[in-house]
Structures are given as structure tokens and as C-alpha cells.
Image (tube, rainbow, N blue to C red; front, side, top):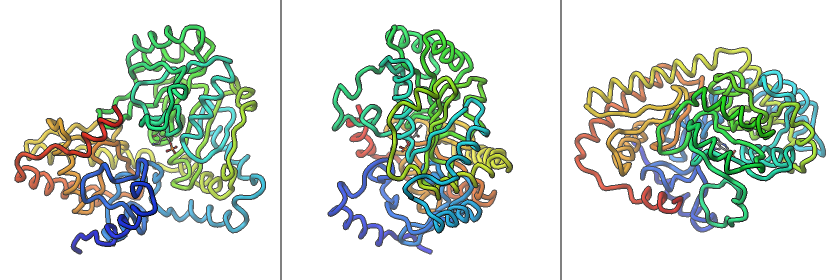
Length: 424
Ligand code: PMP
């Protein structure tokens, strides 16, 4: 089938009239290569169909939630059954307790759980609980790490006041000295240290945490009586069947979760250790949809698969097949790729591409061949992908490299320059 985008273009035009800028936030394709569709019709297993009927092997997985394949039969059956019985009610169902039991069983540092809707809800609760626990204000965070879109953490400064960003000190991920310096600057006012499970910032190579950095973060919190918070919203259950820092042997006091915990159904969570239980019980946090039962039922079904299946090994194997294959294909074309991060959450950037133009060209050519990659955000594997899907991506990558080489010098990507200027 030939690739077309007439329906998507028409929808974008209508959206422009009734939605600010036609779309907002991280799923706006305004900053993606030119042909990326904005609107989708359907998703099943490893595939995504846009409104024009073009099918993609989707390596973004909804920006993380799709871990077991879109429209997973067991997970969705649990969701639908609960939906028919009662979903958003005047209070929660039994599933809330069952889910808190299941999450605390699965995540070794956690003694309790609170549920919410978005990752930002969970990270914001973590911030409040750390301040309530210590009765102190200052939060230490890694420079450039994403923790959500509330005024205290949103990457764009429009609409944000200096007061929203008060009492924050920054360090460089994996840099023990800069972490120590930030904690010194916080002085006697340290409430907590936030850390991403891995360095998974956009546009730059991903990094695993060094054990020295992770252990020092724990020690500094212990010395100061502050809380250590792991933001596992994006990587949670993708690296381990436990909190991601179980891989470096460090237990946080709080961890925030979202994305994959219900395979795409809307629910997020904050997990905590006993030490923070009273502080968690005495902040005010709620939302109209936070206690809906159907996403909790979906999450319970997802957690069962997390505990009982080989999903982790499978997504790692798929990621390794992609990584090895891309190294081979790019090598054949004499082009370097930087493939960083865990194989199941890869960030793939073209070497010697300071303006991003090669990456945009290559990703756009992949898209036209039915492969949805991202030029500057880490991607995700899911268990519905097959070796055949990976091989299809490798064939498309090969074709896209040929086109890239034939294209000659490329203009810098104006929209990227604009974005970097805005974020600053
Ligand atoms: N933390 C991390 C590490 C994330 O990746 C995200 C979302 N990309 C968030 C927090 C915020 O989650 P949400 O978009 O669900 O509010």
C-alpha cells in the first residue's frame, strides 16, 4: 500500500482551529520529522495504524505504557470486566487493596502504595512527602532529568514563576562530586534527592547509574535524614521485576511509577517504605479519577504477567537483536550509530550529526517504510514484537541509510533549533 497522509492533514487543520497549536505536549509531532502522523486509528500487539491506514511497527510503545503489546487480551479482559461492574465510583473497589498488596510484593523497598493517574502526580506527591517528612524544603535533582509537567518540573519555563522553582538544587547524573556539592548547598534544608533510574534524558546518550553514585545518594540521604526518591515512571518494570535500582543494590524510600504498570490503562503509583508512611498519610492528595477500579484491575493483570512470564528476558532479546542488527547495517554503509541505554529501552542517534538533520532524514525514511522510531527520545520494546518485526525494521534501516547517503548534505532542522532555543 502506498503511504498517504491526507486524513491526518485534514484532522490537523481542524485541530488547529479548536486545540491550541493543534496538539500539545510530548505527543505533539510538531518537533518530529516532517511526515510523522499526528493521529492514529488503531493499535494491536506491536502495531500502530495511523488515521490514513498506514501500519507501523511501533518502537515508541505509547511512550512507554505498551509492555505486553497493545490491546493485550488478558489485561483488557480484566479491564472490561471491571468496567462493566463499576469503574469510577464514589469510592474505590477491592482492587485498590489487591493492587497495593501486589505492588508491595513486587517492589522490595515498598511497604505501602498510593495510586494516581499520571507520572507527574506520583513525582509531585513524592516531592510533598519528602518535604512533609523532613519539614524541610530543598530538593536535589539531576540537571536535565524529566520528572513531569507540573510547575515545579516542567521543562518549558513559560507560565512558571521563580517561586515555583524555589528550593531546588541541581547535580550532574553519575557525578558524585557534583551530587555532594548540591547536598552541601542544600545544607540543613535537604528534604530529598531525586534520581532517575538511568540517565534517560532526551537528545543525549543514555547512561546506567554507577554503583558509587547510587550508593552515595543513599548515604547522603541517610546522613541528612532526607528521602531518596527514584523516578521509575518510564523505566519501571522494564529493567527489573523490582524497582530499577535493585540492579545496583540501592533501596530508595520512595519510588514513582506509571506508564507500563497497567500496559496502557491510566494509572500511576507512588510506593514507599515504612519510614515515610506517616508523612504520606498526612499530605492532601486526590483526584476525581484516581480510584477508578478498571485501570486497577488492568494493573493487577499486568503485574501477574510481570511476576510470572519471561517478558523481561524477551524484551531484552528483541532489543539486542535490533541493536546488533543496526550495528551491522550501519557499519555496512560506513555510518556510525550511537545506540545507548538498555537494549530494551534504546536511544538511537546518528554519529556526526550536530544539527540532527541526518537523524531526521533517516527516521522519516523509516517511518515511510512502516517503522516508527524516534530521533531523540529513548524507545521501547514490547513482548508482542517478533523477530520478523525486528528484521523488517533492519531492512527498512538499510534502505533508509542508502537514501541518506544518496541525499548528500542536508539543511539543519529548523524546528529543532527553535525548540532548543525555547527550552534554553
Ligand atoms: N517521570 C519520568 C521519568 C517520565 O518519563 C515521565 C513521562 N515521560 C514522567 C515522570 C511524567 O509522567 P506523566 O507524563 O504520566 O505525567
